[in-house]
Amino acid sequence: MATLRLGLTDHGHLPQSAPAFFGALHEPGMKARFRREKNNTWSGFGELAGTEVGPVQSQLEALGFMPEGSASGVFDYRTQSAVRLFQEYVRSAEGHADIGKPDGIVGRLTRTHLDRWVREGDRVSWKSHRVPAAPWFRLLKAYRERTAGSPGPLQEVVQRRFAQSVQPDTLPASEWNVSKEQVHLIGIRRGATADWKIKLNNDVFILLAGGGVFTFFGSTDPNPNMTSKPPFLLPGQHLYRFGWHKLSQLEKCYRAFRPRSAGVLVMRDRDNRRSTVDLKDERILASAVDRAPNPTINIHWSGRHTSSWSAGCQVISGGGYINHHDELVDCWEHASAGYAGLGKRTRGAYNVLLDLITTLSPDPRVAVGDLLHYTLINEHDLDLEPTLGRGAVRAPLQRGMEILERHDPARFKQYRMHLEA
Image (cartoon, rainbow, N blue to C red; front, side):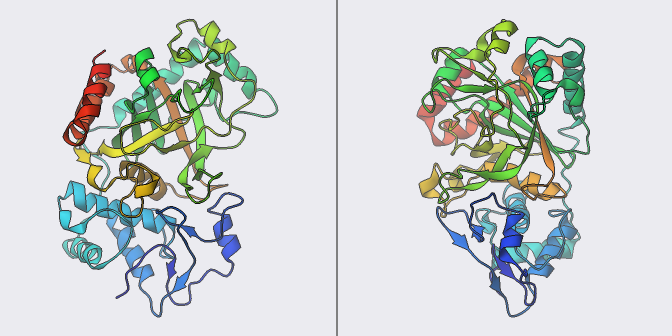
């Protein structure tokens, strides 16, 4: 049996047109080849002598790791995500360390575990009674109702901009989607001034997908060392799409999420000395909103956990996450600290978020695929749902720091000091 990886196809399943195939998955200007994890590593199609990709895809679909996929016979990005997700589940939820790092390559060990699941009749479910999704959807509804019922100066800006001919991807509350049928990402901005100055990855992101709740760590605000007059994404709901980050450096580009079309609305820290998001007067915040939507505020990777790579984007660290069973998952050993380590290591927890959204979305094409509904809230907004409250951000941050304490004690002390501030 062949070792299966990105780009391989079953005999007779080569796409008729590589440009057309990749045109649906890539941004303009990218190569008509598959972008692999390591820097500047691309691969074209490779046709097998027999039929091996399709059966593995059928297994992944039957086991619940590719519920929206089809056995196309082409090992594409969605297949890679499904394989990585299966490997990660076997590694972390089942505790089978022998499967190795989740690299999306189907070798002997991955085939052995796939066959075991089929033989035992297993099927993954992302729903869990230990971490119910209902409180988070109640929070989204309460946040929408409060914002729509009492729109402040910021929401009034959003409403005016949305009424213009070029609509931003930042939505007025009347347009927010809070359906359980959609994939939602919630960013929880903590917003302490000292925290912003040092820019640690210590905000929390909640992914609601497939009925499950997953917690990731990262930052919702810009690192002032990366940009002058930093842009802060407005609170509220924004529409994102499948896309690619680092398009200006194609040797480093990778799958990420981009504003759907014109761009999102941002507030600008014009004096570059204090955090705009910490100002209490919404009239000041409203006056700081850029006139034009910003198309570059992506959702992307932020290294392993030790620094924020945000110049205004929403960033997810790779060091670890909390899964749908409320278990803290350590990804440190296989998560790369930066671009140079990719290949031997992966993007860790960031890949888990990307892979869940990719496999649980019916259509992950770049231009016309499903939308990711991203809602940015402030920490105090958690009080809108009594079963959550501010402990819904503090508790997971405390747990996530266990990973940092284990692997980087010096950075752990700095995180702890600012978490407790």
